[in-house]
Image (cartoon, rainbow, N blue to C red; front, side):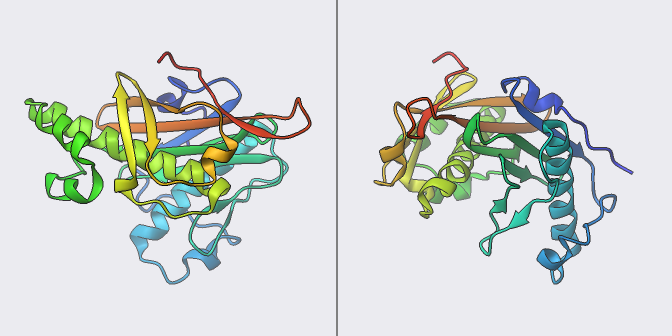
Length: 241
């Protein structure tokens, strides 16, 4: 039976010590849906059940390490996770890996995590996913493997941003309304759509990548600060620009 690894070797390379990650690989058929979560995937395919169970298992392991009040993660009608009181986090999975990243809500306002298999973002999808500037960057990358890695990084960063902004804005954002600037192992997100995000944040939206074997992980962490009595959002600048 596959084992959940906590802390996650992949996420530990880029995350601060107050954020706890967990991961599980090659999980097909080896992780079971808890009784509490059975309702959410009762009519789902076996593939979807495996992915859901693996992601929730990672979340439970990370929450346990965090010392959270509960290890159960609920589910909104649209699929977004509902975290136990006092915690926040994000869950992601591919066919081969599932991962979760959690933190205390006192430390972190919101988290966006996305993991993707390198090569999964095919070129025929680029026009619906990437801006003209992003496609130009891809076209200028002559090495096919490097091009595939870059496409995966861009897509993962957009997914991470969407997950991070959703609890704040409750707004749908299209892939083409977000542009990602890759800076080595880091990235900056520019959202073309006016959302409630800008009203609560100060400074650019920053994130970081971790790449291991055939997987890219993108992470955005937004800190909570209650020092002035009014919570505000401040992107966590733990990575050099």
